[in-house]
Length: 184
Image (cartoon, rainbow, N blue to C red; front, side):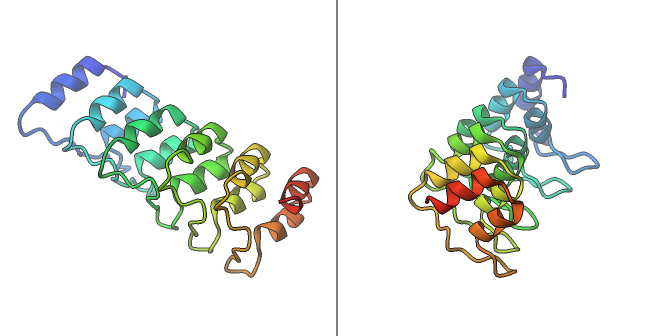
């Protein structure tokens, strides 16, 4: 929790140490290293193949979801370098890190995540909403702009209530977002 990289490195070197132990919130050392933005500790943990980078906590967030909610875009590459990390991993309501970043207005995280071709900009959650719905609903105009720049973005997606992203924009009454979508 305190970002003591050398101590972490030493602990990880002990044979038989449980590297994925969790606390009462089901959070591992990797969850906390991300949450506290201790990049060197995150890198150390992710370099250890026995550390599970996809472990969900009690809120069903993986460490990558936590990075998304805090706009820690500098951590994405560390996760993407692991073969066993799914950048489209989902929580209990089928939100990907991109959904979370879009809702939170984590613009730099969205930009960095979209550099990876396997990230699905049209992935639907349980409500059948894609990340752009989250950005629009929460009036995160910079994220909306980034998502609209993607050629593969599908604005014809209909959510479970029969609404498109444009419908949601009209509900927000945010003229800037409405104009962006109408001009797309």
